[in-house]
Image (cartoon, rainbow, N blue to C red):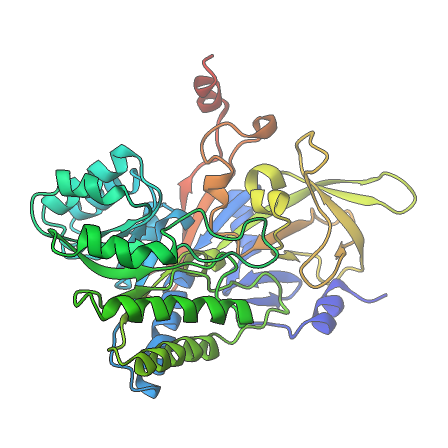
Length: 461
């Protein structure tokens, strides 16, 4: 009977840049996962910090190459979308790579303050402030600008927001406008709830921004489906750029477009996406439309979040037991929960790269993966490339361990990190992995597994 290694080797182009098997054990970026499990146990959340830097530098290189190829006269700026992961070790890694910051909440601003107080950022850092804003958020933005963060740019999400800044900000300041893009044709709504409608923008600029202490620096748009080579994406980008050109002709201070985030991450070993091609097409299209409209090309900003941090993350579980619930439905029960640890897998049917950590020399069979909560939806039974999950047979030689990879974006905040989760399933231990000055792999515990005392305190006991 064929082994689990044979299955993976014949299904995918394996080993990959990130994954290989050493003996019968899986390695992730050359990290021996069996050693990490032996030291820290399971369930376990891992963050491989060098992957964050690697993806940032890749994206910068793609844009640099395209700008040079097309003789593009504008600049490129990489902003990190903080909502993907607010953890300090992520912000430290992004700032180390020269990233600027995009925020979406009032509580992002104290993070900016903390980074500045620790000497990690200067006041000239670009801070793009997105989101529909409550009073505390507009207050914090205004205070930041008054304190000398002159490259803090509030992105106007509605036509009343500007009045608040005019009242609170002491000096001249810059603003951006978020354009309300059309949603994908199969979406439940025609137009995004965020931003200002195309038809209102020009008159709004003339009546409220032109001649005031505010100067319009940037137009912002974002497509929920991400940056994909589809007629929908190119149509929306073109429409956005024609609006930019129209506005640029009456607004000399406008010189930047923010095309948001949307680079996909690998959710399967079969993943294919030509990043350089997409960047080439974006830069070429923007240049073509600007030349056609006889306006200078803008500087380009992106806000990559999942792409920055997603592929750095992993969850490692032990298989606690196997249960045959009828003639053909075999369940492998993990020592965690998909609902609490990987809520996108439950709420959005998001797929991740799922691989066994050990037993690669064992035969395999079809299984369903079950979580610990009492919710019937706490399961994982298909992968991005197939409607089935295959895992090695469980035998008595050692426990079976499995890993879900590229889980580094959003999951901890969606799952309620450090709070109360379904069935009081605790947050797992979180270990950070990077390299020391000699290039040797090292790990450190960022947070121990959540304890009962913290839950009881939150619940008022």
